[in-house]
Length: 194
Length: 85
View 1: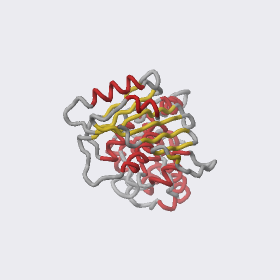
View 2 (view 1 turned 30 degrees about the vertical axis):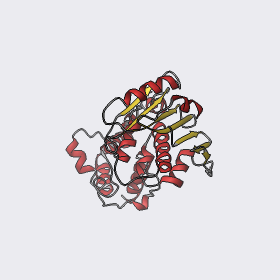
View 3 (view 1 turned 90 degrees about the horizontal axis):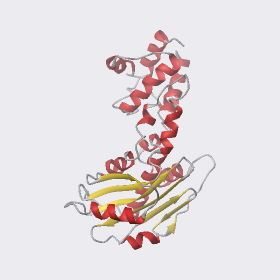
View 4 (view 1 turned 180 degrees about the horizontal axis):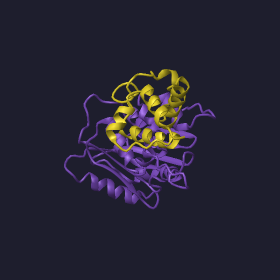
């Protein structure tokens, strides 16, 4: 059973089926605005690439909806995410720093040229020590995602997963559908309805 | 020197994406790493790129970098002495 879920599109944020009011301005992106209004205590956010910002913001809204708990999840909770664009948004930005005659590759852009940095950031922020995985699929494939989630629960320690689709092609083209599933309660049909 | 320090602060804020920090928030003599701005190892690499790109200074020895990045003042003094552009 999916208890909590978050959907973020370029001009819309929905948490557990309820649209969140975000006052947008021309000078600030949606993700930066959400960070400033709803999160605000993690300055590293500003160093993240667009994919990481998307995953981070989605996870923060999701975990707020779930309710933060005192006891840490540790190994019992994993983070498994999916997309089709891998780290394309950051790859493009990094490529600009290695083209032409005056080449100065940017270390801070280079570190984000892997999509699984997102799962790492979420695990670090929330002290999750369980499975951490980012799978790149051809497209949003509910059947394939379900297979992978069920396989992840086949180990002896995973009780809960922060999971979903986090895809970012550029600062302006992205979508996220992130949710929490518990061991033994995941229903593929439910995911198709979100 | 004051002009260079201000320029350097603006460049550091830009390349390290230090959102919400203004040049006047950075103490000229405060350590850049460990405390002060609490920069990390990736930020150090980015500062090395900044030194080469903007001032033509190549830092090859990591120990040298440790000394140069002690504070904005130390960085500015080093740039003043060694810059090629």
